Length: 281
Image (cartoon, rainbow, N blue to C red; front, side, top):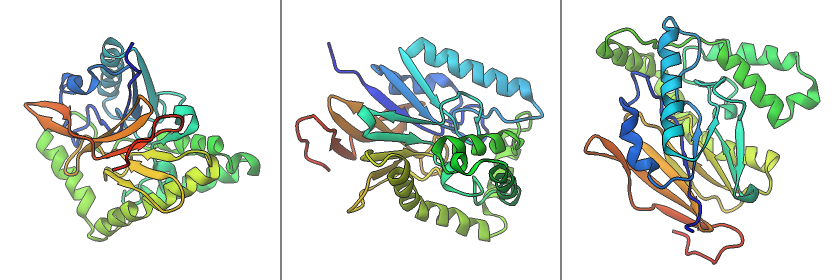
């Protein structure tokens, strides 16, 4: 029997005008042979919308699609899908791998968003009403972030022409100009913040996997966990997949070819505890 394959992806954004995924079948090559699929947040948008039927349809289609193709599915929540499941973070490989969407690293969820000031105030209110011991726990913090996420309406609802939605998305991203600086700053601070989160709440973890910022990468500090961001299925930077199999963690690019998504050659490879030592690359 072949060793079980766990594959982690994030930020699929199915049904979102800003996403590149138009048909779920485009993911088929990524799911071939997968025993356990982990979608680490922002798989669909379940927040309040002027078109709730669209959100419900996308959610239903995604769940049915995954159920038909993989034996086991774990949905970790993100800021776009705060109620998609009750799983806000995940431990894999005997606790060596800690999976969390990543919005919890930012006190305003999405620092470059126009909603950031409102979010910051709502989170402060949430924490004021929370007992200190709960406020400091990973579960308490995650729950507060999810409640605030669920209170925010979708900024780019369906039902408008794709060109208009895309124009609105880019206008929201680059205007006013200081927002570009906020995006770059969020990319810069993520590895350090993710490492601190891991050291505080999962000190035994050797790897922290995030998404959220749509900036794929792998950071290997001298001290502390390896940080991996799996990017997104949106333009312009693309996605990474993380595979756990046969005592190894492999980071592979996701490439779009012939209208489907495929895996590229591994960019990094690490041995997990208890396995034969692999050359890290």
